[in-house]
Structure formats: C-alpha cells, structure tokens
Length: 451
Image (cartoon, rainbow, N blue to C red; front, top):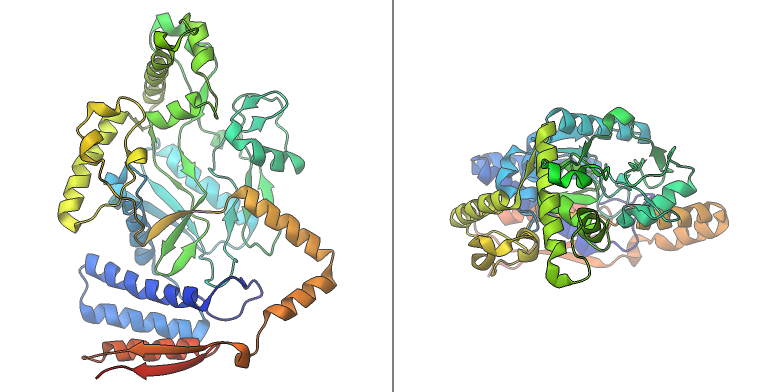
C-alpha cells in the first residue's frame, strides 16, 4: 500500500480509506499465519517487516505464498461461485514484474496457453502489480473476459452483451476479415492509466473454441447451425483485494458449468436461440404450452456436454456441480462456521428443484469477507476516462490549475488521532507504527485510553 502523494492521486480517496488499507493488511496477516499454522512470533515479525517497508518506501509487497493464499481465500469467499470446492487448487502466475502493455498482453497469452494445455481442468490466475491505495494507478484489462465474441450491430451477428466494447475497438480500427456470430474480440491492455491503452489481436492458435454438435442423428440440424463457444472461461473484469492491496488486473480461469453456456445461448439479451433452434427442430413455437423452450434447453445442454467432452475440454453438468457444492458448503460451514452465498447465483437455472440444495440453501446470505473479489469498473468506464484524459492533454493550462487545487499544505490537512488501549503492549506497538507511517502526510497524535 502507498500512503504518499502520487501524480495519479485519487482526490476522492479519504483518510478513512487509507487507514482501512492498513487495517486490512493486519487482518490478512492474522488470517494468513493462522491458516498456515505459524506462530504468533512469526506473524508479529512479518507485520513489523511490512510496517517498516511502508515507512521506508510508502508501499509493501506480498510474498508469493501470501499472494497465492490470498487469491485462494478470495475465491473461497466469493458468494456467487458454486465451484469453490476447488479453491485450494488455484494456481497463481505471478506477473507483478510486468512493465509494458506488450508484456501484459504476452502474460495474458501465457495464462491462456496454460489453461488450454490443461484442457481447462485447472484453475489459474495471473496477477499483475497492485494498485496503490489512494490512487487509480492500477493496470487494467478492458475486456470482461479474455475470450469474448464481438457483436456486429449492423448485421445483428454475435453476442449483444459485447455491443459497446465492440464499438470501442472498431473505432480504433479493428475489423474481422468476415463478420460471423463468433468473432473473438481483441484484448485491450493498459499497464498504467497514465499511459495510452493498446489493442492486441489474439493469435488464431490461442483462440480456443469448441464446435457444438449433437450426438443424436435426429438432432443433426443443431450440428449444422455452426454453433461454437470458447472452451475456457477467462474472467478479466474482477479485482482481487488482498491484505489492503487491490489487484486491478488479475484474469483467471476455471471450467464451465453447462448452464453458463446455455444462458449465453438462450437468454433474450444474448444469442436468444430458443426460437431459431425450435423452428429448425420442427417444434411448435406458437404456444408456450408446447414447452418448446424447455425442449431446446435440454437439446442444447446435451449438445454442449457432448461436444466439450469429445474434444477433451473440462465441463461440469449442473446436477454434479450442485451436489459437489452442497457437500463442500456443509463441510465448510462446520469447519469455519460461515459460508457466504448468493442463492440465485448458486442454484442452477435448470431443474433446480431436483436437489436438496434448492430448499436447504435458501437461507444463504451474501456478505463480503476479505480477501475478496470485486467487479472492476469495466471497459466502457475506462474508455470514458481515457477520452477525458485525452481531452485534458489538449488543455494543459486547465489541467495544471486543477492539479494545483488538489494539493494541500500540511496545515490544511485534518488532524488524525490514533487511539489505543493495551495490556501486553502489542496495540501500543502497532499504534506507534501507524503514527510513523501517517505522519509524513497528516498531522497525527497518539492517545492512550487505558484507565
């Protein structure tokens, strides 16, 4: 964490946020050393090292093991994920050394290659450097996922969820050789918000997709539709919060639950394929009572499972997924006493009632524990910020005036009082470290409230 002035200072960052970052650091060290079985002395030594590093450099770095354990716990705490049973298997690829947009793109390809070579059967996260608390200097991947299909508004081909992002990259000159329903979008990488983003085309041999075919000859019309989907979900629009540090670029992969692809194909706001498939299959689409939508969902589910497994790419059906989650949930609840969960995300949209989880998990509560995953602002927000900064470059005088108004003298900064009470002296030691850390920027006082 950094608690010194920066050229990329976020004027909305409050003193409370900076103090919270320090608190999160100490909380995570408590959790990390407890779960790793380390002694109290080992933990205190590490906290002292971190506070000293903050005092000397204004920031600190997690060790690789701290980073990996924090990323795993963030997944364990993710309330919307039903695949958390495998949280301890998450593999961290350390990209904190990356310095340029080109290196960032190459690191993303390295992550993709790892997932592809493993047949999507492993979970991996590539973590770039942390954002400095108090600034917005964190690296960014503008895409919501590393693999995503474009939407061509004029022809109506592709995934409508990517309409806005497709327009952005097209405005920068991207154009597929031929518009289809399944054109992989380029990646937009930005190692630092003060630098211009760059767009990179994903090489064809990294564009890992699965052709969707139905195993039964009577359903050959589905095979003939030319449907495809990318074999690995590579989420890139979520931030990892670990130990008071926010990692704003941390793409990760798992494997698909079949219902995720089903929703992509059949939701009205996505490919909306229920009626087109039903018409090709000869189902009655004039009445909802014919249950043609239900039949199409079953047909596509069979086709997706068959196609992924035939290609040797990992995928799980919704029944198996929920059975695994239910067992893990109850063991985790017994072990730790808590499991955050979002019922409507955990329960599958198909045949949900065919499992005890449907009713027995309906009291699950969603709440945030750290380490945690948070949704990033996303490409459209980054694009607007980029346009605004580009405009400000053309108006340097106004920009200088704005910067002058943002810096305050020490006399203008509010007084901070660090309050502590202690019996063994530990709180006093941490309080003094905190005073030393903050005193370079703020007016800080130390108050002992022991009776």
